[in-house]
Length: 390
Image (cartoon, rainbow, N blue to C red; front, side, top):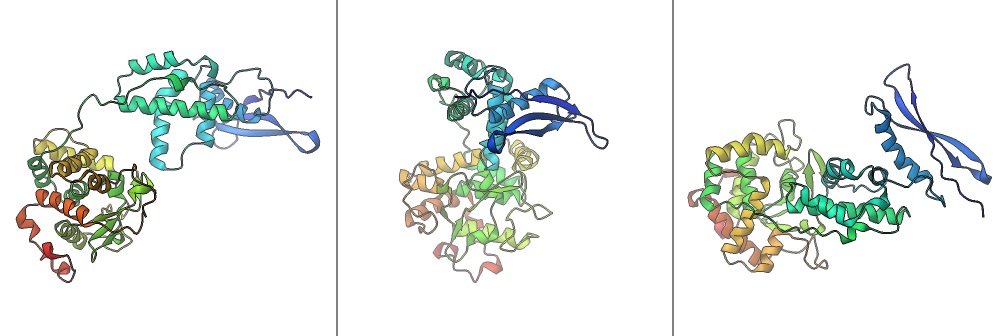
């Protein structure tokens, strides 16, 4: 049997008459009837990768591809090369997941382990390294799990026989209890906010939606007659994507008081059509949640003297309010739309149960003052909002 040779290829800098100089990688590819075809791939510009060493790190990902049939490797694969191949071939499509993975790969995994050969990474060394990182346990778990995923791909590509990360222990137990706002703190924060930010917080506290889901709401998602809202998408950094899990796409009960607050904002919004974003920017596009938090919510929290908050604070607050009201655990789970529910349930057509509606309404009545619950914008008069809305 003919031995397949491991080819290193060659990297060179090509000067262009117009534009930036580029790095080019040349290698051979098998053609018909055993012929060898010369191929050239542009790795990137010299402006992007000023040093040859930086460009060579990207080259290894191509080497792994073109040598997948090699029977003997002259040069063992490194973690850096594995990372580049994973990014080019296996990175998840969901934008928020992409950004999370890329941040971990570029900030933590590649700087520490990039130059290591795959066979030289040991479980104890990784475990000790994770202990030195001044990060939350949950973040360390994400790093550990992504390294595990990298090695699973290495095994599938026959670049490694073992996955050393299987033996790495890392607890995800929280070091501190997540921040939860008291009712008076929620109302103090709302008093400091103007629309649309006030209504955003109302939706976050009264429905427990994730911030990406709030940014992804469109007016057509609301069924005013049946008092429900269907979360159908998420938006991160202006990019529209799927919800976090399939189970997240559940109809949510819409309490009459919250419906009136939303309808009131719709009447004042520049973009009130069904296809418009509920919290559109002045240009009609989805807003960026980080800017809203830094420019509006945190200053309002400081003025309200309630301390540090984040978007997820509202989801934790909603969950805690449900528990304090003695809501059945199953109902809590469904209102929060957690993924660990029987997958046989119909995601799109299941009706909102009376128990879920009652539990949600209790939270809304806690958050919104009684006088505000009685307000009825004229445009809502024709809508059938139930006995609580009259």
